[in-house]
Image 1 (tube, rainbow, N blue to C red):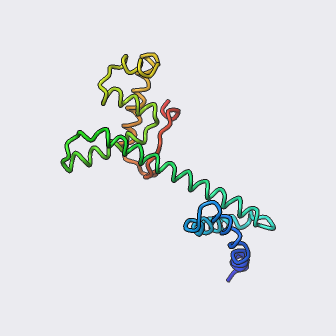
Image 2: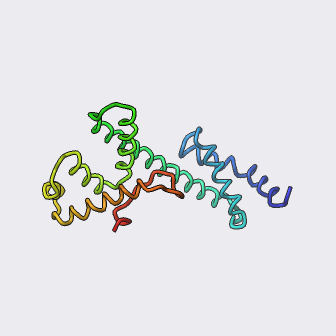
Image 3: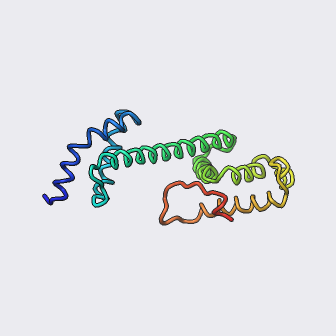
Amino acid sequence: MSNSQQQFTELWHAEAPHVLAFARRHVGAEAAHDVVAETFMIAWRRWGDLPTPPIGWLLVTARKVIQNRARASRRHRALEDRIALLDGVAAYAADSADAVLSRREALERLARLDEQHREALLLISWDGLTNDQAATVLGIKPATFRRRLSRARAALLAQAAPQTSDPEPRHIPAQELS
């Protein structure tokens, strides 16, 4: 065993109980072990950056791990909620296997759009409004609505393109489409 591995093992035995206690207070007993494991995995990767004593750094890292997990969980729940809402709205569609799969894929893509783009598409496609009517509903100028609708359609088409590096569902902010 190398010197670094030995030191890391000693750090684990000395500080893991403290990090575990910290994590339990914030995420409960079930998720605390995962937080500790991820915290020490980061510590191993950043071994040369750890200060002496390392407990403060470990707890800050554990807090960031907890925050990242909470953000990911919120994003996942929000996407599921949007898909469920859109699925409920689209429930009138035919229930053949092909239609269900196609509808589900369309709803997932729609749910990934930001709120402004999704609303623009829904006002036109599902509510049957004209561009001018939709602009009035949103309280914006018709030209502004047409640009928003164009960007929404572009974002939807961009999601349909094959993705090679980012298989995770992703929210597309309006700023990226400008």
